[in-house]
Amino acid sequence: YLISAILFVGLMLYLYRQLQQQENLNESWNQIKASLSHAVIWLVFLLMFINWATEALKWKVLLTPIQFLPFVNALLSVFAGCSVAMIIPNRTGEILGRLIFVKKENRIKAVSVNALCGLSQLLITIVVGTIGLAYLKWGGGLESKIQEQYLLGFNFFFCICIISSLILLLIYY
Image (cartoon, rainbow, N blue to C red; front, top):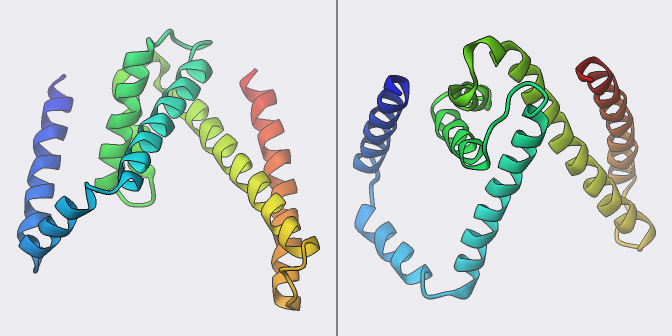
């Protein structure tokens, strides 16, 4: 828990410093307060929490063969991962934050579970993106040859991700 306290203090200092460097802080604050009257911002907040809950459930399910983790702890580990990821670039801090709630003897295995989580997220993004690009191509909205090359590249990347995911699943299970 000492690491959590240090992390919390570090994040608060980081946020304070970022706010102090903001040029138009009062104007930005007024814009934030004005946006709270719109229903769309509340929908975004709701979807954000649903996304975090889904991510926590995915983390809990994938971590269960290694270590039992209650949903609340899985949610806290997702929050910790998001917090550390804000400090350390390229989302490498996400796994460090998530490992706070994992027992020391299971941390190496949890890293591979996190890689599986990331690949499953990427796989879903690629599947939905490919469906969207296919809709644009055959729905009449994609006309440029350059954009068709993106579709071919996307499909190639999609196949690579499926193969990588299958290999990780075979290693994991």
